Length: 270
Image (cartoon, rainbow, N blue to C red; front, top):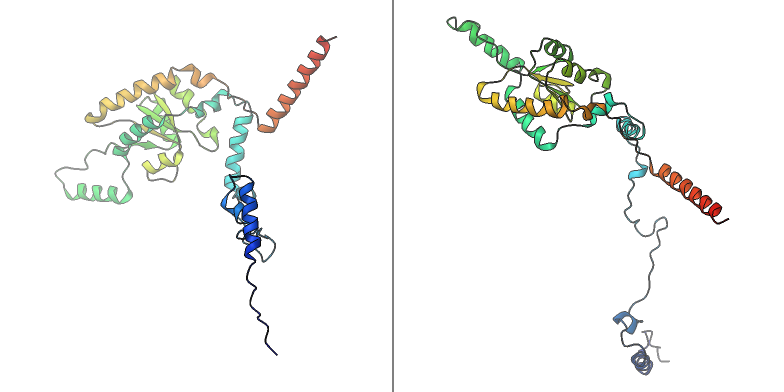
């Protein structure tokens, strides 16, 4: 008995030639895959359990964010939805990036001493009997009670307020006090950025009482600009916050308006 050949049979060349001839008679603009269907077979992936790897999807919507992140976002949505009174809406008008950069560059030259630096200065002054205690260095002032006293006594040359103080009642009255006492003030972004200047985690407000003679011209120009931008600009502290509606509410309003217009058009046709 002869053994049967178990290998795959050779393809029928005549059938292949007939298929190619029939394709040539058809459309001429067929792709290579259409011209060679026996080479390309559809193999759809199965995304069942244990099958093909799932594609990457944006799961941001399903993430459970920390509570402080949710509170921040909800507060931002409420501020944009509600009609915000002028005393609170004024904190949305802050210095632009270039102005804030120049202000913080000047303030960085007058950062307060750390405890170590202060101890070294007092120790050196105590050892040197000829100089005595010496004058205190010119530094930034911070602390809401301290700065309130400086503004009332008109000792503050410039007051810098953070826009994201929480609760806002801590500083909501300070711009009005600065306007009454004719002290220039400005509102900047980030209480953490102000806190970094005075070696603290956060700082609601910072005041400048004095600067060196070399920086006096810069401080005077800042005071003049901020006085015109904040103190004398009634639009910055008299306007109400704009009421921005959500996407679903805008859709409902548009649908209601469309129905009203359709009803008016229907009445006009009678």
